[in-house]
Length: 118
Image 1 (tube, rainbow, N blue to C red):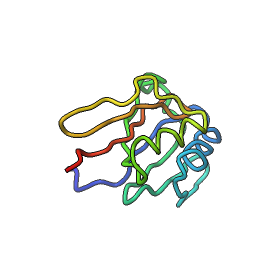
Image 2 (cartoon, one colour):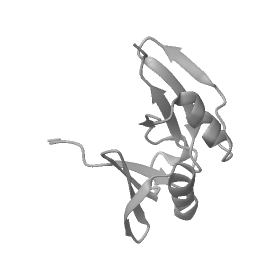
Image 3 (tube, rainbow, N blue to C red):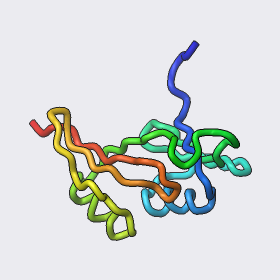
C-alpha cells in the first residue's frame, strides 16, 4: 500500500552526464550520492538518478518531471536555451496553465509549468 511520496526515480544511461545536467544545467542541489545513485532536492521533491534497469522500458520510457520556474516561464526557457537545451514544441497554452517540454541529457521528458495568471 502506498503511504505517500518518497522520491522520483529517473532512469539514466550515463550517470555522470545526468549529474552534470541536473546539477549544472538545472541548478538542483545534490543531497545524496551512493555509488551510482545520486539524489537531488527540488523544493520538497527528491529526484533520484540511477542507471536504467536491464530489461526495463529502455530509452523510450521513464517519468516526466515538471518544474515550476521561479523567474517566469519565458526567462527560464531563455536561460536553459543558453545552456544548450531545446524546446521543440515551444510553449503550449492550456486553461490550467502553460507548459514547455524539453528533454534531459538522457532523453527523459521534463517540463516547465506556469500556472494560470490571475
